[in-house]
Length: 201
Image (cartoon, rainbow, N blue to C red; front, top):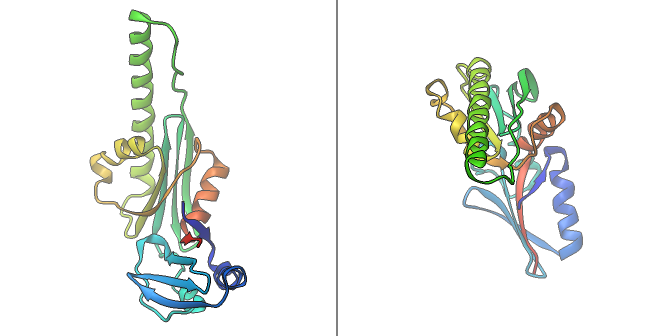
């Protein structure tokens, strides 16, 4: 799992890496800021929103490339609910959070179990349709990237809606619990972070 590092902590993060692992050489490799320390530990930092980095091998220059786009979105979907936000830079301009009850699994067998399974599938489908309806409204005409998270199958179901097929999804994938307002706010913050992979020697 990558470490998520906000823009205002990039320089401090690299300084802390140097303190822990010794003198660290920086370079730009494959669109990422990479570091190799004296003890053999390495890191690779990638810009948010799937952007390649082609600037100087310097954490301050890397940080300066991190500001979010003028028009972007977040879509989180799980069986228990959804959360959608549209943003201009760091500012949320529209959002919607919705919860849906989806029947839990039953231990009953036979026809009863099949009936529960059908009910769960219907409830889940209704939840995805509601998420797609709100996403189509909030994200209409989105020109920038869409960061997604939750349950991959659920997100794919929602994005299969014809009104949403033009959206461009980018990393990072956000592993979130059932979306609530606080979960959405944290996801918006996480989407704007650098993704740093560390390999300790």
